[in-house]
Image 1 (cartoon, rainbow, N blue to C red):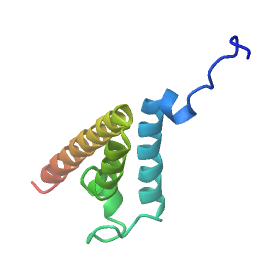
Image 2: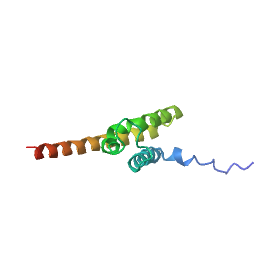
Image 3: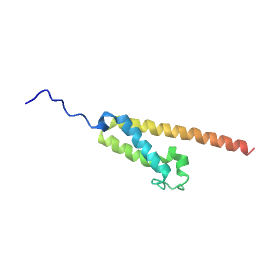
Image 4: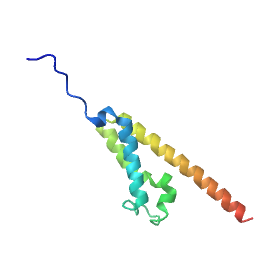
Length: 106
């Protein structure tokens, strides 16, 4: 028996949980914007990407629950931070848009 052999390396997803969480979120965002996920809400398909900060709940929550029960806590944390960043960026963009529209109406 050879004791000098190294144990097998952990799978890539376990070694890079942050990349997996953010990558999964970016892929789902791309699927929403490009069309395959459009229609997951009662909003019109063309309006969903404009409100991606809120619409993402329909696909982020189920994925987050899956990560939680799989025991991928660090991946879930990265997914949640990415979703929060998306929400805040969307909120800021909507605020600017509404501010510009209110100036036009005066």
